[in-house]
Length: 58
Image 1 (spheres, helix red, strand yellow):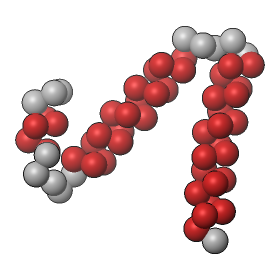
Image 2 (cartoon, helix red, strand yellow):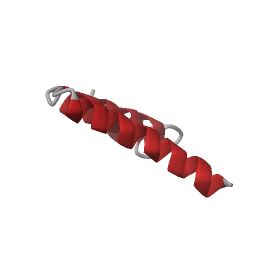
Image 3 (tube, rainbow, N blue to C red):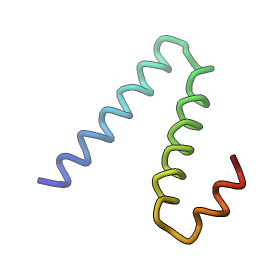
């Protein structure tokens, strides 16, 4: 059940990137990847010992 849910989420991302590629919105791909990485960094840094070091980046 959980693997199917995870696969559907990755399918959503795959479909979104295919859309960007098909519509020739290549300039938007680095923007989306950067936003995803920053969001991941914020989520990982919550309630951890790494948080003070992450906050110095911003």
